Image 1: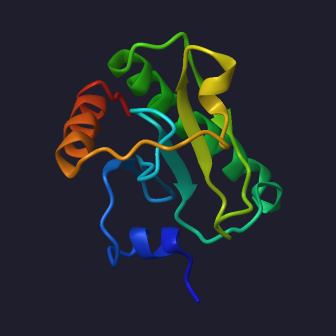
Image 2 (image 1 turned 120 degrees about the vertical axis):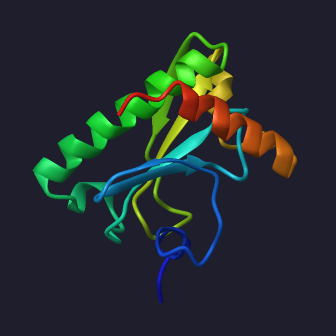
Length: 132
């Protein structure tokens, strides 16, 4: 069965997409730790980050860097943290999280519940700062 992220890539499930290429996609996390929390995925369904080919791993990091720079320009923060956990969805994904403190990337903390309008506004602002 296709992962939820594969279903997003295929357009079966809506997402607040920030950017995509032939190989990768980025969209806002719908259960964010903070506003601007985004995910980056390979479009190919690969479960474990270290199962990616070396070239793809390098390319996804370069793609992630572009998304991170756009988030930095949009959300006041000291830097963008990155986490690859991979236990909750069997499809490799990178979390890009705006950070002001170490606790900002603590996945045990309560998640935000932004409105649809807040997600749309955040996605538009990040996309306006994105240089692919």
